[in-house]
Amino acid sequence: MGGKKVLSIGPKTLFAVLGLALSVSLFFSDCSRNKAEGNGTKELVIWTYDSFNSEWGPGPELSQLFEDETGIAIRWVNHGDAGAVLSRLLLEGKDAGADIILGLDQNMAEKALSSGLLEGYKPAGADRILPELIIDESYRLIPWDYSYFAINYDSERLPNPPASLEELTRPEYAGKLILMDPRTSSPGLGFLTWTKAIYGDGWQDYWRRLRPSILTIAEGWSSGYGLYTEGEAPLVLSYTTSPGYHLEYESSDRYRAAIFAEGHPIQIEVAGLLGSAKNKGNAKKFLDFMLSDAFQNTAPHTNWMYPVTPVALPDSYRINPKSDKPLRPPAPTDADLNQWAAILSSGQ
Image 1 (cartoon, rainbow, N blue to C red):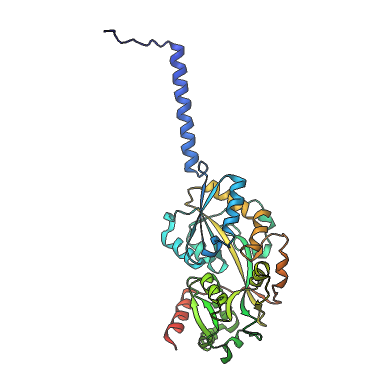
Image 2: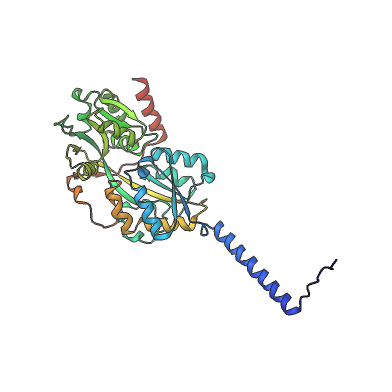
């Protein structure tokens, strides 16, 4: 039987081995640190509303553009409408698991900012944002598109649409209006804001007068607008920019937006970086990308809102009407939402 061979290591070899071991240790330490800082992975988690990441929304196209540019794959997590996204964020807090929330608007900004969950980051290109659209000077919430709320109508079924909020209460519109719930939907919240701005302390009485006109209160914009295009009702809450979609993809001017004499409230959609983000470096790259021409040119023909930077609009936007009186009223309070719910549920 042969004996075991003993390996003899000289001083030079020993130092070389120790040096190599130290280098390997430092390498893996750096990798672990980079991963913890969100720079060692190629993933990004974004919470948003359903229609953004729908087959016809901007999500799929923007995902491909961003991955082609950076190699980072986006994992979208849908939570209904924007109100549901905010509610979920406030519920889960630092355990949310998202890197970015996208799709809240200025009416939800106070709750989002006061939560302390958002971290400021000024993206490359932020100075190109139209100044009137900035809602947070610390860039905890960053604008990426905007439009104006409007009552849209089916011109084949309703050739003479209402011309004001008050006209919506007329008997000829009974059961013909689809709205969204302000507790879960950003358009729903915007419409409540609109009625408060016009009627002041009398907004509750307005809703009592409006109630007979309402066919249904949808949970979110997608479901409500879907009922409208399916022919359930000829009037729906949407945007001044919605008609452009039908002209672009259906070559139809059937669906239009009514312009009201009292003006139309703006909606500014925003995105924010979470302080608890696990992929923070990737998230910042996305926020930079969000203000690039590639993103801003894509959003108008997929999300059907105006870009926040000066890029050209699709030709189909020519059908979208403009109001001479843009409004930017304060957001409703929780007490307002409770009063609204009581009016709609009590029948009084």
